[in-house]
Length: 168
Ligand SMILES: [Zn+2]
Image (cartoon, rainbow, N blue to C red; front, top):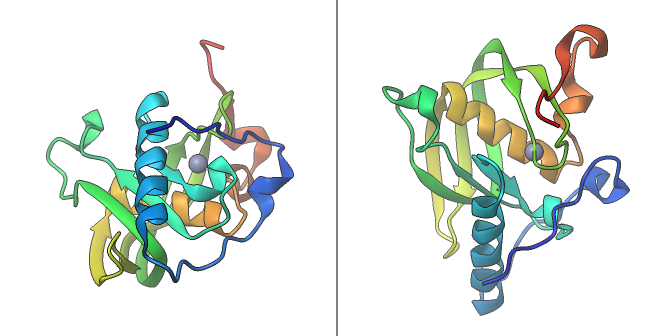
């Protein structure tokens, strides 16, 4: 397995829109393994999108199970989501987000609190998920990457909602 290089803002490749995956082959499996390895090598990463390593395909990985604030929350654990689509959502809430592609900042972003999601798994089987809270937020953040958006693009106020990380 390989740890891939993470693109960082303002790399213009982060603004590209990723294409649907339609071939489920050994190459895809290898790429997903590399993406896993890359996410695991990052600082406290709960998710990663293929766009962040310069591969413009609609693949994200989300795993909030090790996130300390989630001890009692419902979540799905480790997820590989291919061609993910949010088909319903409810409620809006402000929350703090970070991103491996924006290493020096965090920001407050408004996201839906509950979502219903359709996605294919790594073998191309269609699945539906209901998600809430931080897991729903993480998935919305990663799907944004597939559409060329960063959390920076969703700040209501750059002045009040953008924060420099202290230990950099
Ligand atoms: Zn991100």
